[in-house]
Length: 220
Image (cartoon, rainbow, N blue to C red; front, side, top):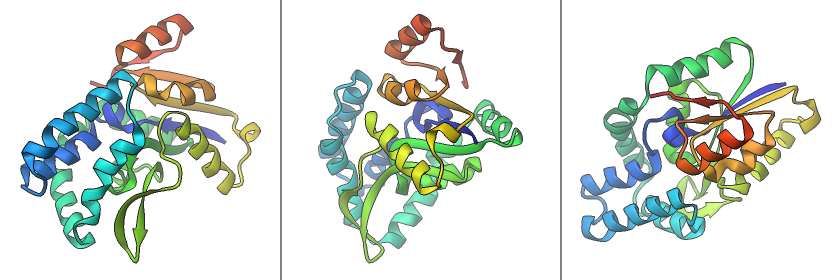
Protein backbone atom coordinates (compact mmCIF):
# COMPACT_ATOMS: atom_id res chain seq x y z
CA UNK A 1 0.00 0.00 0.00
CA UNK A 2 1.03 3.57 -0.73
CA UNK A 3 -0.91 5.87 1.58
CA UNK A 4 -1.56 9.59 1.09
CA UNK A 5 -2.93 11.35 4.18
CA UNK A 6 -4.22 14.91 4.16
CA UNK A 7 -4.98 17.24 7.02
CA UNK A 8 -8.02 19.33 6.17
CA UNK A 9 -8.18 22.70 7.94
CA UNK A 10 -5.67 25.26 6.65
CA UNK A 11 -4.16 22.50 4.52
CA UNK A 12 -6.55 21.32 1.81
CA UNK A 13 -8.82 24.19 2.88
CA UNK A 14 -7.66 27.79 2.99
CA UNK A 15 -9.43 28.16 6.32
CA UNK A 16 -10.69 26.17 9.30
CA UNK A 17 -13.97 24.29 8.87
CA UNK A 18 -14.42 23.78 12.63
CA UNK A 19 -14.11 27.51 13.32
CA UNK A 20 -16.27 28.42 10.33
CA UNK A 21 -19.04 25.99 11.31
CA UNK A 22 -19.43 27.72 14.66
CA UNK A 23 -19.33 31.13 12.97
CA UNK A 24 -21.93 29.97 10.47
CA UNK A 25 -24.28 28.89 13.28
CA UNK A 26 -23.73 32.24 14.99
CA UNK A 27 -24.55 34.11 11.77
CA UNK A 28 -27.70 31.99 11.34
CA UNK A 29 -28.83 32.98 14.83
CA UNK A 30 -28.61 29.36 15.98
CA UNK A 31 -25.94 30.21 18.55
CA UNK A 32 -25.87 33.36 20.63
CA UNK A 33 -23.23 35.69 19.22
CA UNK A 34 -22.33 37.29 22.54
CA UNK A 35 -21.80 33.91 24.21
CA UNK A 36 -20.20 31.90 21.41
CA UNK A 37 -18.17 34.24 19.20
CA UNK A 38 -15.51 35.12 21.77
CA UNK A 39 -15.28 31.51 22.94
CA UNK A 40 -14.83 30.29 19.38
CA UNK A 41 -11.99 32.75 18.84
CA UNK A 42 -10.43 31.75 22.16
CA UNK A 43 -10.41 28.04 21.25
CA UNK A 44 -8.96 28.80 17.81
CA UNK A 45 -6.14 30.83 19.38
CA UNK A 46 -5.42 27.98 21.79
CA UNK A 47 -5.25 25.52 18.87
CA UNK A 48 -2.73 27.67 17.03
CA UNK A 49 -0.68 28.07 20.21
CA UNK A 50 -0.67 24.32 20.88
CA UNK A 51 -2.50 24.70 24.22
CA UNK A 52 -5.98 23.50 23.24
CA UNK A 53 -7.85 21.29 25.71
CA UNK A 54 -9.49 19.07 23.11
CA UNK A 55 -12.18 17.79 25.47
CA UNK A 56 -13.25 21.30 26.49
CA UNK A 57 -13.33 22.28 22.83
CA UNK A 58 -15.39 19.24 21.82
CA UNK A 59 -17.87 19.97 24.59
CA UNK A 60 -18.25 23.45 23.06
CA UNK A 61 -18.41 22.20 19.47
CA UNK A 62 -20.57 19.08 19.77
CA UNK A 63 -23.28 20.22 22.18
CA UNK A 64 -25.03 22.38 19.54
CA UNK A 65 -25.40 19.25 17.39
CA UNK A 66 -27.47 17.65 20.15
CA UNK A 67 -29.94 20.54 20.27
CA UNK A 68 -31.29 20.14 16.74
CA UNK A 69 -32.77 17.36 14.63
CA UNK A 70 -30.41 15.71 12.15
CA UNK A 71 -32.54 16.83 9.20
CA UNK A 72 -32.17 20.47 10.25
CA UNK A 73 -28.42 20.06 10.79
CA UNK A 74 -28.05 18.52 7.33
CA UNK A 75 -29.94 21.42 5.77
CA UNK A 76 -27.71 23.94 7.51
CA UNK A 77 -24.64 21.99 6.44
CA UNK A 78 -25.67 22.07 2.78
CA UNK A 79 -25.80 25.86 3.01
CA UNK A 80 -22.52 25.90 4.94
CA UNK A 81 -20.83 23.92 2.15
CA UNK A 82 -21.98 26.38 -0.51
CA UNK A 83 -21.26 29.60 1.34
CA UNK A 84 -18.24 28.79 3.51
CA UNK A 85 -16.44 25.65 2.32
CA UNK A 86 -16.43 25.71 -1.48
CA UNK A 87 -14.78 29.18 -1.52
CA UNK A 88 -11.97 27.69 0.61
CA UNK A 89 -11.17 24.91 -1.87
CA UNK A 90 -8.56 25.98 -4.40
CA UNK A 91 -7.43 24.35 -7.62
CA UNK A 92 -3.97 23.46 -6.22
CA UNK A 93 -5.55 21.44 -3.39
CA UNK A 94 -7.80 19.57 -5.81
CA UNK A 95 -4.78 18.92 -8.07
CA UNK A 96 -2.71 17.52 -5.19
CA UNK A 97 -5.42 15.03 -4.26
CA UNK A 98 -5.94 14.14 -7.93
CA UNK A 99 -2.21 13.46 -8.42
CA UNK A 100 -2.15 10.91 -5.61
CA UNK A 101 -5.41 9.37 -6.85
CA UNK A 102 -4.03 9.06 -10.40
CA UNK A 103 -0.95 7.31 -9.01
CA UNK A 104 -3.17 4.69 -7.40
CA UNK A 105 -2.48 5.65 -3.79
CA UNK A 106 -4.92 5.01 -0.96
CA UNK A 107 -6.33 8.40 0.05
CA UNK A 108 -7.56 9.51 3.47
CA UNK A 109 -8.34 12.83 5.11
CA UNK A 110 -7.35 12.76 8.77
CA UNK A 111 -8.66 15.65 10.83
CA UNK A 112 -9.47 16.73 14.36
CA UNK A 113 -12.70 18.30 13.11
CA UNK A 114 -15.73 16.11 13.67
CA UNK A 115 -17.05 13.84 10.95
CA UNK A 116 -20.43 15.59 10.70
CA UNK A 117 -18.69 18.74 9.51
CA UNK A 118 -16.01 17.02 7.43
CA UNK A 119 -17.62 14.01 5.71
CA UNK A 120 -19.29 16.14 2.99
CA UNK A 121 -15.98 17.97 2.48
CA UNK A 122 -14.12 14.68 1.98
CA UNK A 123 -16.75 13.69 -0.59
CA UNK A 124 -16.25 17.02 -2.37
CA UNK A 125 -12.56 16.18 -2.73
CA UNK A 126 -13.37 12.64 -3.84
CA UNK A 127 -11.39 11.19 -0.94
CA UNK A 128 -12.96 7.85 0.00
CA UNK A 129 -11.62 7.53 3.55
CA UNK A 130 -12.13 9.93 6.45
CA UNK A 131 -10.53 9.59 9.87
CA UNK A 132 -12.05 12.28 12.06
CA UNK A 133 -13.24 12.96 15.57
CA UNK A 134 -16.52 11.05 15.88
CA UNK A 135 -19.55 12.63 17.57
CA UNK A 136 -21.60 10.09 19.49
CA UNK A 137 -24.98 9.24 17.97
CA UNK A 138 -28.01 7.73 19.65
CA UNK A 139 -30.80 6.55 17.34
CA UNK A 140 -29.38 8.65 14.52
CA UNK A 141 -29.25 11.86 16.54
CA UNK A 142 -26.18 13.46 18.10
CA UNK A 143 -25.78 13.21 21.87
CA UNK A 144 -23.34 16.12 22.21
CA UNK A 145 -20.56 13.79 23.36
CA UNK A 146 -17.53 12.40 21.58
CA UNK A 147 -17.20 8.74 20.64
CA UNK A 148 -13.78 7.09 20.57
CA UNK A 149 -10.44 8.88 20.85
CA UNK A 150 -10.41 12.48 19.55
CA UNK A 151 -8.44 12.61 16.31
CA UNK A 152 -6.04 15.24 17.61
CA UNK A 153 -2.25 15.37 18.16
CA UNK A 154 -1.07 11.83 19.14
CA UNK A 155 -4.71 10.74 18.85
CA UNK A 156 -4.34 11.03 15.08
CA UNK A 157 -1.68 8.32 15.13
CA UNK A 158 -3.80 6.09 17.37
CA UNK A 159 -6.86 6.56 15.20
CA UNK A 160 -4.85 5.92 12.02
CA UNK A 161 -3.38 2.73 13.42
CA UNK A 162 -6.84 1.55 14.49
CA UNK A 163 -8.17 2.31 11.00
CA UNK A 164 -5.31 0.42 9.35
CA UNK A 165 -5.90 -2.54 11.66
CA UNK A 166 -9.59 -2.55 10.68
CA UNK A 167 -8.48 -2.62 7.03
CA UNK A 168 -6.25 -5.60 7.76
CA UNK A 169 -3.10 -3.58 6.99
CA UNK A 170 0.03 -3.75 9.14
CA UNK A 171 2.40 -0.81 9.25
CA UNK A 172 5.17 -2.83 7.59
CA UNK A 173 2.84 -3.39 4.62
CA UNK A 174 2.83 0.33 3.84
CA UNK A 175 5.45 0.82 1.16
CA UNK A 176 5.35 4.61 1.35
CA UNK A 177 3.22 7.17 3.19
CA UNK A 178 2.69 10.90 2.83
CA UNK A 179 1.09 13.32 5.27
CA UNK A 180 0.32 16.91 4.32
CA UNK A 181 -0.32 19.34 7.17
CA UNK A 182 -0.03 22.99 8.15
CA UNK A 183 0.13 22.55 11.92
CA UNK A 184 2.70 21.78 14.59
CA UNK A 185 -0.14 19.93 16.35
CA UNK A 186 0.35 17.23 13.70
CA UNK A 187 4.04 16.54 14.37
CA UNK A 188 3.18 13.15 15.90
CA UNK A 189 1.74 11.92 12.61
CA UNK A 190 4.31 13.72 10.46
CA UNK A 191 7.01 11.75 12.28
CA UNK A 192 5.06 8.51 11.69
CA UNK A 193 4.93 8.70 7.88
CA UNK A 194 7.82 8.23 5.46
CA UNK A 195 7.16 11.52 3.63
CA UNK A 196 5.96 14.44 5.76
CA UNK A 197 5.11 17.60 3.82
CA UNK A 198 4.50 20.98 5.46
CA UNK A 199 1.72 22.88 3.68
CA UNK A 200 1.56 26.64 4.24
CA UNK A 201 2.96 25.82 7.68
CA UNK A 202 2.46 27.71 10.91
CA UNK A 203 5.68 29.23 12.35
CA UNK A 204 6.38 26.29 14.65
CA UNK A 205 6.01 23.69 11.89
CA UNK A 206 7.96 25.84 9.43
CA UNK A 207 10.90 25.83 11.82
CA UNK A 208 10.77 22.05 12.30
CA UNK A 209 10.48 21.49 8.55
CA UNK A 210 13.54 23.65 7.95
CA UNK A 211 15.54 21.86 10.64
CA UNK A 212 14.64 18.40 9.35
CA UNK A 213 14.73 19.14 5.63
CA UNK A 214 11.07 18.38 5.07
CA UNK A 215 9.54 19.73 1.85
CA UNK A 216 7.33 22.79 2.16
CA UNK A 217 4.39 23.29 -0.20
CA UNK A 218 1.88 26.09 -0.72
CA UNK A 219 -1.66 25.37 -1.89
CA UNK A 220 -2.73 29.03 -1.84
